[in-house]
Image (cartoon, rainbow, N blue to C red; front, top):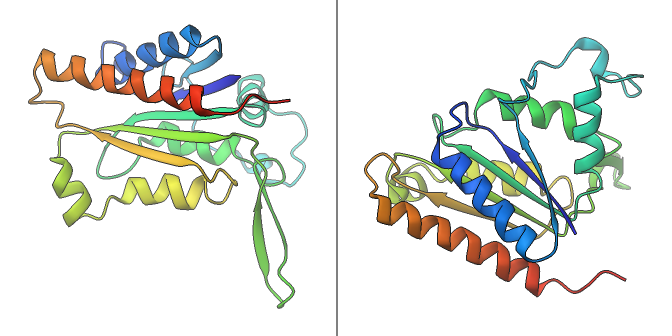
Length: 203
């Protein structure tokens, strides 16, 4: 299986990068292929040009087209980014806007009542959202209502048809010890190992 990993953190020494590398090792250990994209290292442009809003935009920039091709073929998707103001960084919001295109990741069709309903088109069998943060977990979940979890699970992957979507909040990172960070990495590795092992083989 091919697993698309989208990483959005500007610091290559960040814990987000450590998570991504841990996942890549665990995925390879299971005999699968990680497609890792470090959006900042790739200098991914989050701005959507006017021409890309067209239903048929013609030729897209090569990097954008590569991302679209992979996300529309991936067996699993992993999103890794920090919690900034209870929202994703702008670069990955722009990736979402440019790469999860109507007609490829989802489409709308008549609902028989004069309106429309969305139909998900991504083939991914699961999605995992990993968000690091410095806000205590209980504040994010109980006080703020975990807006990032709702966004990715319901708004994005719900629309695109990926029903098996899990979010994990990790933190507070800023006050964590090396032992705690090692434990988080081990838990992440165990999760993806178990998830891949539990999926039936594709015919």
